[in-house]
Length: 309
Image (cartoon, rainbow, N blue to C red; front, top):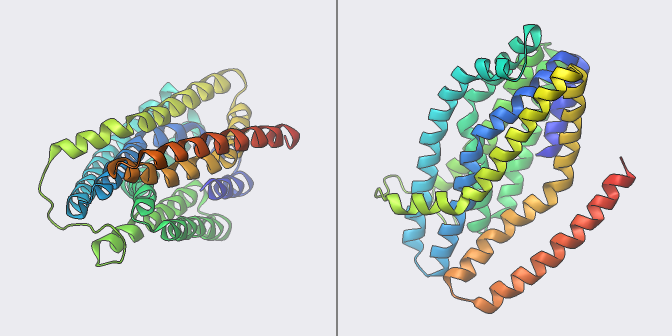
C-alpha cells in the first residue's frame, strides 16, 4: 500500500507538477480521516468475529461478519456524500487558495466516489486474516496496487489527464481492493466466513465492534488531524514546497511502519480466537512474542531510518 502511494506521488510530481503534488498531500489527511470508520469496523469487527469462532459458534460469527460489512457499506456511502460537500470548505480552512484550492477539490471529489470501496478494502484486510485467508489478502492488496500504478502510467503519463487521472487511478485501485473480497465472501467459499444475504439486525455486535476498534479509529483520526495542522502551518510559513516535503516524508514513514501495521492486523484475530477459546497460556505466549518482535523491529527500523535519511 505504501509503495503504490509513492508511485502516485512520483507520477503526479513528475508529470503534473509541484502544485498538484502539494494539493494531494494537503487534502489526503482529510480523506484518510473519513476512512477511519473502515479501520474501526475492520479491526474491531474481526476481533469480535474471531472470538466468536473461538467459542465454537460459526453461524453467529457469519452473522456478525455480515452485519459489520453491510454497516460499513452504508457508513461509507454517507461519508462519501459528506466528503464531497466538505472538501472545498476544509481546503479553504487549511489555507488553500487559487490553483491549489481547485486541485484539492478536484482530487478530493473524484476520490470520494470510491471511498466506500476503500473502506471495504481496509475492513476485508482484517477479515481475510480472521477467515484464514491471509494470502488472498496479500493478492488483493497487490492487485489493487498494480491497478493503481499501471493506470497512473496510462492516465497521467499516457493520456495526460493530470490530477484527475491520478484520482481516477487511485479510485479504480480501491474498487479492486474492496470489491474483489466482497465478491469472494458473497459466493460459497472454503474460508471460515461467508456473507449472509439477509442477516438478522442486531445492534449489540455492531456497538461491540465500534467499541473494540475505537482506538484504531481515534489513532487514524489523530494522525490525520496532526497532518492537517502540519500542512496548515507549512503552507502558511513555507508554501507548497513545505507541504510537498512533508508529503514525501509521510510516504517514507508509512513504508517503515508497514511491518508493524501488517503484524498487528495478522496477529489480532489469532489473539481474539484464543480469547474466545479461553486458551490463556497461548494468549500470554503471543503477547510476549509480540512485544519482543515489536521492540526489536522498532529499534532496527529507527536505526535504518536515521542511517538512510
